[in-house]
Image 1 (cartoon, one colour):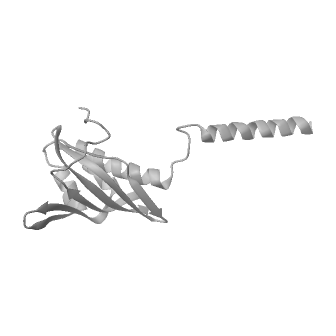
Image 2 (tube, rainbow, N blue to C red; image 1 turned 90 degrees about the vertical axis):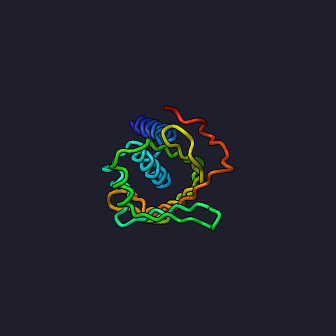
Image 3 (cartoon, rainbow, N blue to C red; image 1 turned 90 degrees about the horizontal axis):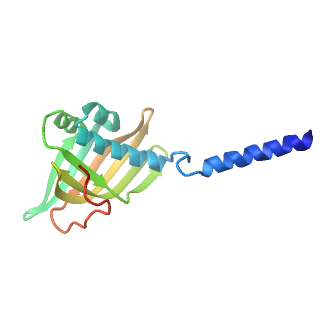
Length: 165
């Protein structure tokens, strides 16, 4: 009986280890959750989903856009609430895609840095780099601040290929 019990325990342990190592079954890491939060914000932009945006944006958060111009750097600043209000208005279809994000997490704060491209009504608009700061709340990760560059020239084609309609 003892040998049978040990074989059963070993067999169960092997099955658990196999299940945990199977692709798609691993536990989501904090880094995965941070990436998913930023991707969810991009989805809310495209869908003009104000309720969804409110779920991932921190109350009182800020968005900063930085664009080079002849007279120096042009900075555009707005609050997360202003971004949400803009999403609620009819307008162009927006698509932002990032790739190869670098994510750093420490306890309840995180940063994500990634190159991106931006499309308006299916046409390429610009590229740049996103730098996103997030805080982990009882409701999950929330975007506290979003700083991005706007680059109109010198954009490397996205490794994601062309956007799909």
